[in-house]
Length: 203
Image 1 (cartoon, one colour):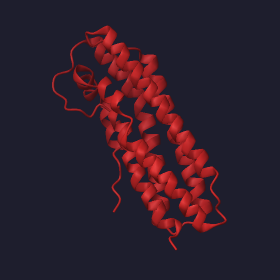
Image 2: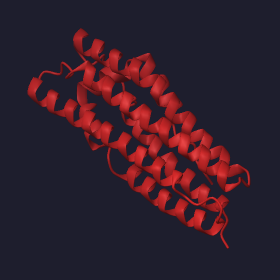
Image 3: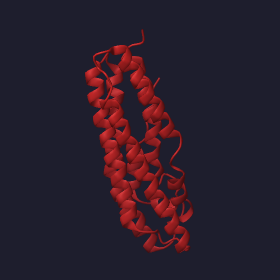
Image 4: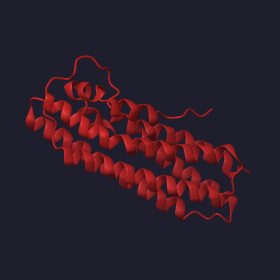
């Protein structure tokens, strides 16, 4: 019978893919010139400063799940850790979405296009937040008294997480294309956000 430990390793592997989503907003595209206008730099600073603590929160949630995989953890402990981690991630993506919403459209020359991209990114971040909230509910509903059932339930969670990490940051990439990405790459807080949300590799 497969215990919860190998399954939780699958969960951690899927989760490290999810951390890439945080990096998408961390402006780790190639930095060259300063991305143009002072207004754009100010926008990038506002967004990056808001993203940094949330990227750290996402990285900490990721690390908590990774840590549970290294021990032969009891189902109750796995459930508690995973549930809290998904809640933290949901909150973090919601906060990033609110920060991008509050910042308004970046000043990148094409106001209409920039506004569409910004709103697309906000919707995407809110959708990701809702997905993690849904995963939390899924984990909370698992039966910890029956290890086989619990392991099966975790497999479903891991597969949902895998889907979430594979699709869903296209709008963010669109938002940070071109000058916007360059301006974000210049911000110290985005550089540190990118490093704090770098996914841990699992063997």
